[in-house]
Figure 1 (cartoon, rainbow, N blue to C red):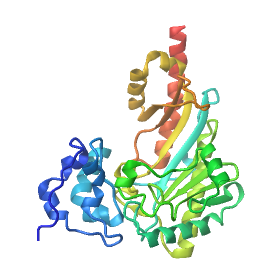
Figure 2: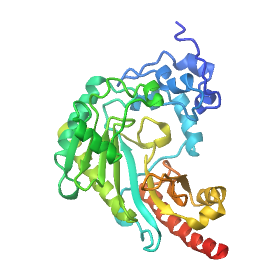
Figure 3: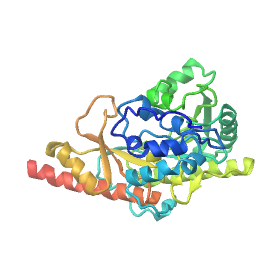
Figure 4: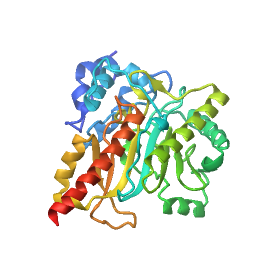
Length: 355
């Protein structure tokens, strides 16, 4: 029994093309995972279908990382730059963060997002219809327990009223169908069933249910109080975790090697992106290549923004932590705070030099 023929991988320079060799394919293409019946063919669908993938693989459940370890392990080690025997530690204790963004730094807004997955259910590419609905049910009950500044409302995508939909679009909260990668990876099956969005009254705490991750949890607000944003995020995650455990006995998927499990291996570990929108006029004059190089040294990642008003301001950048795996959440948030303070100090020096 030879299984499926070796596929043509269109993304020839992807990590999938490098690590899914014919011998590996021969060995693994008939394997199926227990949780959601996921296969290697389903995992690498994006790399086979499209020619623009860098990574090109998704996990359909926790088992995928074990059953297809011959592919996932070396690929993850290369992408994240970790050793084969490395382990991952999580730390969401906001009290360990020292300092904050300095008062004079022109930060417009702060946003921190992470992903979480609940054990026993498939990840979005593999999750079954029944698992998705059960998972959503657990979340509805968890959201109902939110108190104080976390309290808010859950909006299921199924049967959503047009006025609600438009408000969520205006707030930039709504996630849509139609992403070619997510479709090819199997993440839009049974759309929009079992999916929805929660946000608190102040619109500073947001949870996406059953999009690319089972849970994408976001804390954000205007200004530069990164520590406050992180503290709210940690509290929200804790509340969800306790509620799910009390109701179902299930925990978040936390792997000793890969940290919090996500469908995309690039998000393993913390799955965290902590970012600020900040004006850097001095660095803008210096040029984007110089800023990119400096951010690399500070373990940060710069992106351009469309500006808060929708127009390109030209000097506003989205600055975030570069790493996901191999560092704790506290370490990554600290790097972002310290790095942004450093960038602003240097920005003032550059402005003075160019004046």
